[in-house]
Image (cartoon, rainbow, N blue to C red; front, side, top):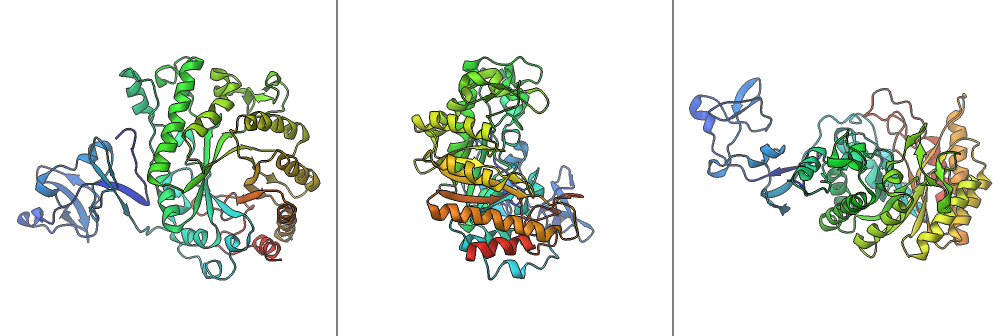
Length: 468
């Protein structure tokens, strides 16, 4: 599989049917009944271990080989329902229960009945799905999945939908060697979340199509090689279009209506001296993070932002919203630069909303400055989406009470602005719980649930505003 290469850890994609023939019984061994993990293979077949003894794994119908193993995927053992087919063969999705839920001992009863953020809010309430790999996503925890399904109606992958997860380097290099210099995408990192959203009627924010961070350098270089030169503008434009087209075609074909908003471009505006191109009229980022080069700007110039939105509009279904997303949007110089960009995009009908990431401190930014920035963007006639909300704490004996007050004040701003006519359509808190249980030694304390998945004071403050 190249274009539609899909695998997941929770919703694993397998292939083909399995025969009930217990071939290993003639050799004096039982057949496996509760595992499909291969520990050893020989001329007789594939062997697993159950109850501390060898067992034979069932062979395929008509003794056919498990063709998907050569592509890196196991074969189906519990379903024969074909989800789609490609040149390799038929593919299916099997749901696996996770027996290693790090939140397995958490009592979530208070979070899956009674108050619900999604039900109380006058806008979508979303949550960031943390995780740097498929196996440490909250979708891999039944307890976390249950809390999210009850409390939220929108989710955002914090990492797993970004270019470094989506691009298949080896397949892209093979393409280049064969004369097709377009990238190949794989979708294994996002299928579990998409399946979960589809099953629970939850929307997903697509995050993000074009960003200078977490976009591998080889994507911008000749032959998709780390040591290649940057490709020219024309070739990079074609690669960008191919990437965006593949993302939209996959998601919209297999999960129609699930992803109905995309952060098309992320953090393209800069105000640090020496790190932006002012000639664009909106301070196009040229560098980031201690003088690193923005590879999109290096290969395509400031036009990369407009090209991305044009391609997104071209391939997005008509009801899909396109958003520009950025941080520190409340700083006056940055607010003005983003407004200039939005006006240009809006003139071509390329943008539907502005995303304010909203990493806030206890006292910074000034809340009036934050509120004024939202109003200024809203005056341009676009939706407002709060995309990555976190409010940090200051170390003190009552730090969580103080944090709860800050969350209360910020949500009061959102609700008051919504009442005044500002089109706030979604608010996403960027992460479910403090001390995220899938990470070792996570020290984060910015979220609405604690490490035991108990509601913090901040949750209660938010709910009191939403219910008022």
